[in-house]
Amino acid sequence: MSAIETIQQRRSAPKLTTPAPSAEHLQAILAAGLYAPDHGRLKPWKFLTVEGDARIKLGKLYLKAALAETADLSQERQQRIKNMPLRAPTVVIAVAQPVEGHKVPVLEQLIATGAAVQNMLLAAQELNIGAMWRTGEMAYKSVVKAGLGLQSKDEIIAYLYLGTAVLTAKPREPDAVDQYCVSWTGDD
Ligand SMILES: Cc1cc2nc3c(=O)[nH]c(=O)nc-3n(C[C@H](O)[C@H](O)[C@H](O)COP(=O)(O)O)c2cc1C
Image 1 (cartoon, protein in one colour):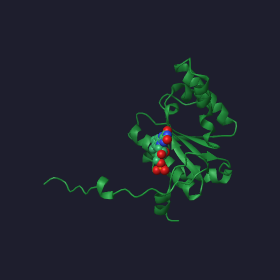
Image 2 (cartoon, helix red, strand yellow):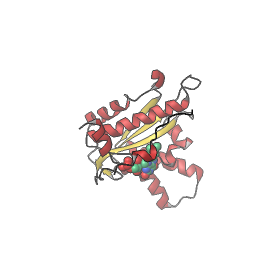
Image 3 (spheres, protein in one colour):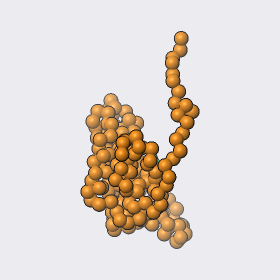
Image 4 (cartoon, helix red, strand yellow):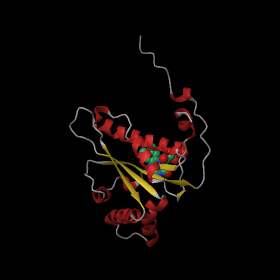
């Protein structure tokens, strides 16, 4: 399949189940991320893979973060929070670890990490592995960052959920290119 076909056919898989990507496929997906455009070759990223029981520990960390803000969460809500990382057999946490004070602005380093995530999504599509880019409130909580061993300047760019898609969504209908892309011809 051509790169353009892979791009056109990629869809997110909100429901994922086992089997998890094989070690070989996971490696290929992670490696694809590392080909992302990266100004200054700063490699301003870290990718944490979370599989098996580590997902349970991640769920507990989420709960700790939620309870630190709201002590009286219902049992149902607590359970839902704990179960979040169990929505896929494999979670890749894409973290931007920007180099501050560098001539390459932090924004560009965050974007490079996002580009790495997109590469991973496309690699997963190519390998017929279900994938979804999620963030949500747990991407922004200091307790979660600390529990993952991150610094406060680090940013969680994605929780990339990987597994076997329960349902395969149809490719999106193409957007009207002219609606979003215009030729800028400058001022006279
Ligand atoms: C930075 C970022 C964060 C996202 N976070 C979420 C999320 O937390 N929950 C969600 O349902 N979709 C999230 N999405 C959107 C999905 O990944 C997906 O792109 C969207 O549902 C459209 O589906 P499609 O990829 O099949 O076109 C996020 C996308 C991006 C780029």
